[in-house]
Image 1 (cartoon, rainbow, N blue to C red):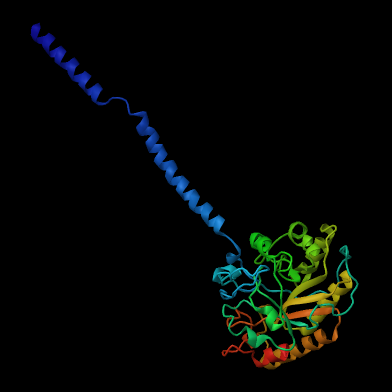
Image 2 (image 1 turned 90 degrees about the vertical axis):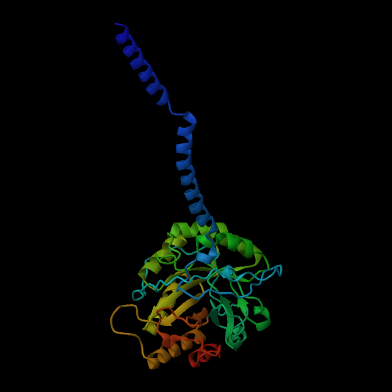
Length: 365
């Protein structure tokens, strides 16, 4: 009996030891385990948030992808030049979107308030040609200070310094939502005399906003600049029916908006279609017209690109129209860059030596 009791006691002690060795897990250890997972998640979230916070005009896709720019920037207060990243130029490789053939008819559209009657060439310089300038090298900018050149823009609020000495009017642009902060900081009284609205808002690959959102952006950030002495140039849509529809809805939504001129972009091999589209906008809205991008470019996918002779013929037709039409105030031929990003290279306006090509001299004088 004593032996049995001894065996039972030994068994009980063994069980107790097993239970004690498998005691409860520490609450702190559980929290630490979950906490480590939470901490990793938070760090990942912070990284994403930082990328979002770092998004600025430097990530903006331009109307056509262009080389990164490092032009010195002029400001109203003569602050130091901006860094190369400040010019808001993308190196994205997206190709320009195709533009269907323009339409020369439009359903009735609301006429913007404060619309001036067309009074001929009312721009300050009297010159009717401009530079779309995304180039990082400003050393040859003076080579483009040609007799016909009065204007320059960079697809961003930033402008290269020294423009006034060259007799060129710099025009900041509010490309889209991602440039609002830079635009607000730079575009103040005395910075410039003109401002350009959003870039191809009717195109999903560009600033991509509804007419209602475009009107809201205009009312909040651009419309007040009329009180600072600015001339306000509309958003620039593509020369197709979607552009006409966007303009109509924009002006209908933009109650009380002030617009001094209406801008558009044209990529087509039919120069007459550019003229027809300009006439449609002018007759519909009774506003002066700006063509802020154009080139002899076929995006139809068939038929090939224009020959050099056809590019010259296209240019001649556009030049005659611009120079002979009072209400067509300014035109900006596309191609003042080394990489035309898919656009027919016969449209090139910048030669390898930093001077205009023959076609460039024909446009710019």
